[in-house]
Image (cartoon, rainbow, N blue to C red; front, side, top):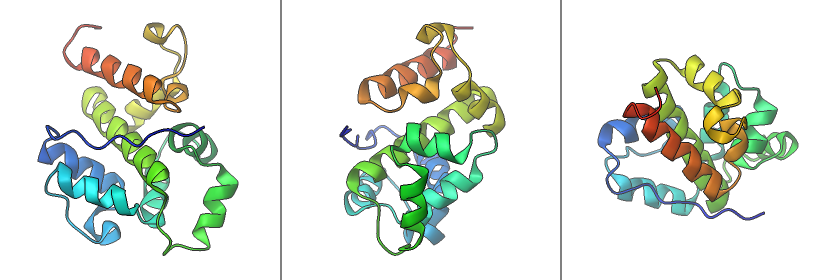
Length: 161
């Protein structure tokens, strides 16, 4: 199933970009510093380095590799292992967009819940607001991503306490 990569919002603050950049390995792995949403757009257009996805997956503390790759990034564990054999080959636009979006949601959830471990636990737990579906299970489609982002916005602003 093809999922369109969503370009980072122009309103994304530099603090938010720095958090996403850090989850993807920082300027050392990305080979550039992200100063605005257009920088991020260009990076995703050309494809994230495969090592950025490796870094993101390696930083997860609660979510298992298999599940995070398949549900959030749309890549099977086997495909990810094959990609590790060609680290210089960039991810596709779709894979890059989904990895970016997962990092973006993880960064936002970390801000809201206070730690990455809490954010990952939230992604893993069935939520009343999603009719007992787990947020991570919704990340496979643009509609599901939007539901998760809207839910996080409501949590951030105290609409769901």
